Image 1: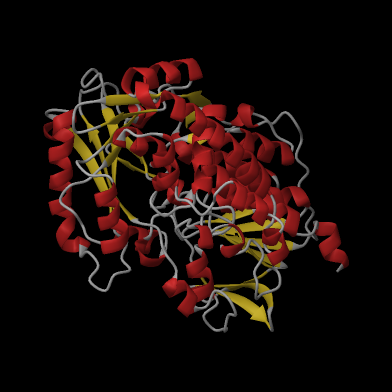
Image 2 (image 1 turned 90 degrees about the vertical axis):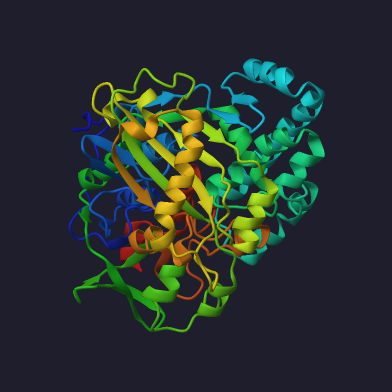
Length: 515
């Protein structure tokens, strides 16, 4: 699809400008490339996939488009700011549609709870299902807003690579009880176990265990309330493609289906990259959108590291794995009318299942499922009259010595998931016309994700902010990091905001030439 003409003219970067290589074309890498182009760098993006977007890329089968990763867009203003920094109008280039309800949560007892766009509708929904917890819910909303102001607009949009950056914020962490987990905070405010789940599950969207992730992450509830939940027409793939078009318009270059094997250095100064083919490409700066584990443990394997060495990476807590079943169904657009754009199907256990996934690393027989039906909002994902689905279940990552053997378990787990989904969409499995499955093995091979983790490092308190891999390397000059594994963390708004942080750390191109 051809992008509309930009409202503002983008100056093409001159040929003698300093060079920047961006490793990886995920949303963090693409946004970094856009901002570097706007700063005057000649940018080259190198990515191992055949499509842009990284974990937000897609595949097509038999007329169905399966968006492999993120399904929703919150805080579209981070993209409007990104586009504005590049002299463009986001809303002229990308079409987003509000989703309401944001999602419906279902429990085993048959109860259902919708997260709505309007606060009036939300209040009515809470009073309908959890009347005795309404006052606690109101307090919870105020808690979320305070953490949003402190965590997202404050810490999340500026560098935290110096210890003093953390020390001066400690009073805020103490006042907001960052030592408590998301689940603990929800349990403090409401009593109904179902409502505790509904107010605490958001960390799973960024790879964290609600029992252990710092309560700062309840800010996600405020993000949704304040900015809404949106769907990108054409899927997140279209968003990534639009970002790529900006990079090309700036004079940048994108090299797909190419893997960076090593980051080259002279002393502790980064000088470029070596591809798996052996070709070397020089650069004035390198920005890695690869997982920090892949960046430090593999691409810089020839060097010793002070902080993010092999031992530290191995002892870190990594996010859970993901089992995702994508399928398209024939002639079903008028069926299962109660299944909307997003549905969360709770299994019989909540905290027990979390313990199996994160602590015991056990593939349980029961499961909870996030069900995405984009064809409700976007007819382009499937042939006319057909449907497109994405069913995701959190599972253990591959770190355990006796990690799940997905060569044996994929078919078994798919059948278990089918039985759960048949209760929601009777007869769906007989109408499947195309399907695809991703397991932690695929995350490891496709995205080079350590231990097949779905979201890089888990966002626990001592793996967040200053404790997370910094956006500017602690060990190597001219090396920068963006994306889910670095500050401020995973999730679309955060990975794009990581390029805002990068923008404050990388010198302008003119300044770089002078130095």
